[in-house]
Length: 125
Image 1: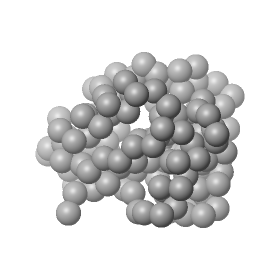
Image 2 (image 1 turned 60 degrees about the vertical axis):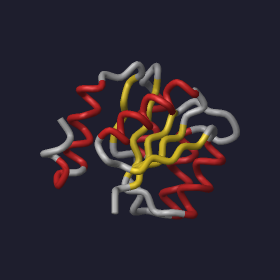
Image 3 (image 1 turned 180 degrees about the horizontal axis):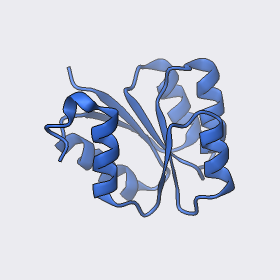
Image 4 (image 1 turned 180 degrees about the vertical axis):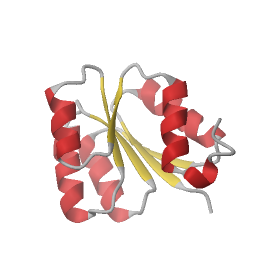
């Protein structure tokens, strides 16, 4: 069964890019269009990884990380931010395992995913 990844971003282009990227490596990808929907999906199902934008409607990424840490402390969350700064720092201090600066480099993302899913290193290149 493929690993499941949840992509939470209010920008359609980012959701589509990440869905295609992860699907190419055999991951099952689900998406959410805002923080509230993403939180509900994350609590209702198990994901190997959650990638979440910081600035979103209804529930921002920092609050999503804080809430998920309480509901599902085992969640692995990477935060995305177009202007990494206080919000990204607060998200990592609250439990996100890393931060991707937007626009992100796909090679950097590939390396990060290979590290997180070491059993997939041979296929994530």
